[in-house]
Structure formats: structure tokens, C-alpha cells
Length: 134
Image (tube, rainbow, N blue to C red; front, top):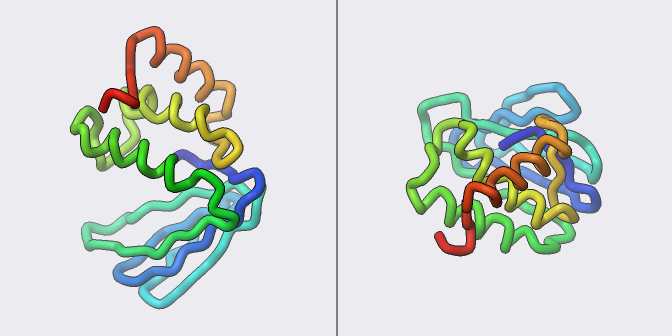
């Protein structure tokens, strides 16, 4: 996930299994099973599983807004097999960018900067990338 903010939602993580690395406001820390953390609205953050082990996380956004729709769109992209699931590639960004622009009230990219994401979304549309048809 690119570093991003949620303009008006708090994101919380509770690790159920394994470990989750979270970067909050530029500082990385690792949460182990049983540990939790949250990110207030407007604070840049991202996360990753830097191990080969399975990580299960209970992740919430409050208020929920349209996050279910956002994650459903991401799920369709991943399940389509058109992008790699182990890293962000230029092709993955071309699929992700239009989704992020459709959900600007929920999520705004910080790195890459949002204007770059907006440009990538425009390029994706020009190339015919269609999320709804997946």
C-alpha cells in the first residue's frame, strides 16, 4: 500500500497472527500478535508484512464511509490475476490509481504524491484499464 492518509477516518490495526510492520508519520514499528495501534485522520501511514509468515490483522476504519467498496475494488484487481500481489509495480499502480481517485474522501496518497496518482489514473483510463469489468 502506498503511504496515504484518511482525511476523516481513524484506521486501527489489531494483529491476530504473525507480525505487521506499520509506518505512522514516517516511523516504522512492528506489531506482534495481540498488539494494536491506530492512526488518526490526516496522519500519513502504510503497512506491510516483511516476513514469509502469514499475518492476520483485524483492520477497521472509523467512520466506515465507503471503505468496503474501496477494498472490494482492490480485491477484484488482485483476484483478476492482472497484477502481482507481492509488490507495487507500474502496472499495479495503473490499476490502483483510478480506484484511489474514485475514493478520495476515504484515502489520499502521500507517496507517491496525490497529483502523480491522479496523472496515473488519467493514463490508466487512456489505456483502457477498467476496474468495473474485472
